[in-house]
Amino acid sequence: MVRVLIVFESRYGNTKRAAESIAEGIEETNGIEVSLRELKDVDLKEIPFYDTILIGSPNHVGGPTRGVRSFIDKLGELRLEGRKYAVFDTYMGGDFEKAVKKMEKRINEKAPGFTRIVAGLSIKVRGIKGPILEDELPKCREFGKNIAIQLNKEREK
Ligand SMILES: Cc1cc2nc3c(=O)[nH]c(=O)nc-3n(C[C@H](O)[C@H](O)[C@H](O)COP(=O)(O)O)c2cc1C
Image (cartoon, rainbow, N blue to C red; front, side, top):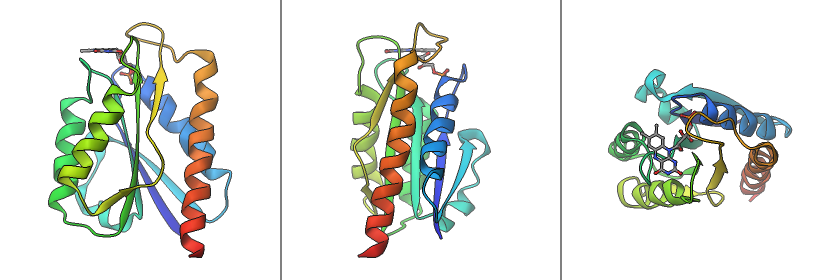
């Protein structure tokens, strides 16, 4: 059984909603177990039990939240090898993929034992509190589906 942990931070519930939708997309494929965890509830001791970590952050001032940045640094300190990751963000303005790119860069630098499984996903919300724009939500499910397909491909290697 492949195990995926989705860690997210969410002040107004939009990134949480995206995370839930991604989980639904992954669960369409058999053989993958998904857990959702708000960042504040993450126990670092459980991280080694997962093959893949997905990290979601709202875009705060053109990048991921301070909490997410600190979580990435802690992931690196665990010195895990052969793990996979993917990231996603929610944003309201012209900052498409900005937080995602910064998260990917930080993971590459701080947690080199993690390999990107798919390119990051950026989801647009209406205003600071959201909600997620209607045609954005299906992208989350699709993202989850693609991750599941990739994980199964790797398992067959
Ligand atoms: C302190 C703060 C800073 C923000 N800065 C940006 C920003 O620079 N660019 C942007 O597109 N959205 C920005 N936003 C909007 C957030 O991206 C939006 O509130 C978030 O996606 C909502 O997600 P959440 O409900 O999971 O908290 C900011 C929001 C807050 C609260």
